[in-house]
Amino acid sequence: HIAERFLPDKAIDLIDEAGAFDRLLGDARLKKIDVPQVERVVSKIARVPIESVTAVEREQLRGLAPALQRVIFGQDEAIETITTAITLARAGLRADEKPVGSFLFAGPTGVGKTELAKQLAKAMGVQFIRFDMSEYSERHTVSRLIGAPPGYVGFDQGGLLTDAIRKHPHSVVVLDEIEKAHPELFNILLQVMDRATLTDNNGREADFRNAVLIMTTNAGAFEASAKVLGFGGEAAERSLGESRAKAAMERTFTPEFRNRLDAVVYFHGLSREVIRRVVDKEVALLAGMLEDKQVTLTLADEALTWLAEHGYDATMGARPMARLVENKLKKPIAKALVYGDLPEGGHVRVAVDADDIALTFEPAPPAGTPDARGSGDGGARGDSGPGDSDRSGGASSGTPSGAVEA
Image (cartoon, rainbow, N blue to C red):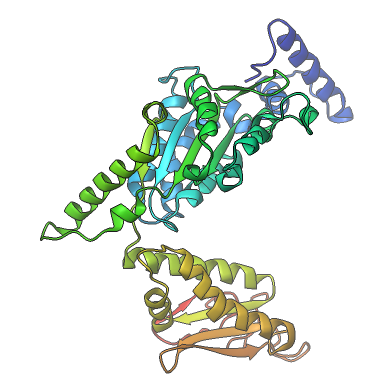
């Protein structure tokens, strides 16, 4: 874990740090410094999650795929590919001089490529580092990643990518929309994918052996989305789409770059069933935001169906759904919170009226009234008293049949 130091120096320093840490505890000092205390010091010196130096990581890896499938919908094949590669690396069955994994995420926009990388970092408990490659489309901008050469402004500042890896050696690094980057950047990445090291302008090496390198691209998305003639069904259409996308990426990326990737992970377009799950996720996120403001939220089934139908776009993925939820739910609720019916909390009911989303606001009872604790229909969230155990978050127990309580 402490790769930049050598024995016996780092062992002696580790013992010294563990003893100093114990001495700072004062009266709570331990009589014996054991493995957990040493692991904590290693985690601090190496700037890695404590799980990475303990046996807890094994349980973490076991539940990695299910954890990702709970938040990323419709991309089980992509999740399986990346979690398998990470398990191989952690089991020691990959070359030591390579990153944990080097992946190219390919697929249409809005299907979860960047979100999967973000949730992967969260599930692993490591840093999420993202670079937008549209900012590195010119040759001179590529030097910002490893530092400016001598004689140029910023020579003494180091590189953005190398400094980020030195600061967070255990991380998920995302190079978003890699096809927009200057070709010079790919020469830098060849070294990273081959030997897991990158030297900055000051001659210092950044170690990528504990990093997951993910590059996303929309290359081939247009070709993959083209309609297929015939009666092959969804499986045949998906297979042909991947073949078209693969051909497009072969035209976009050089053979030496593609040959160093661990896998090209294809993300499929989202179906209507998946979009319905995205609706549930967006509504749950909104309900969580409103909880702190003492506001509860109820959506009828017809409202959820309306959002799923009007937020579905086969070419744009899930992003239109987020915009629809913002326009139809968040904006009206925000107005009610600031200068409307919900300044002190209350309840929001969402239904469909005249083929459009209709919101009903029920203010919280004034403080001091008998039902101020939320015992009334649609009251504000409050502490449950005797007999209130059948209510969820202070909402009325008389929720209409078919409604979904968020």
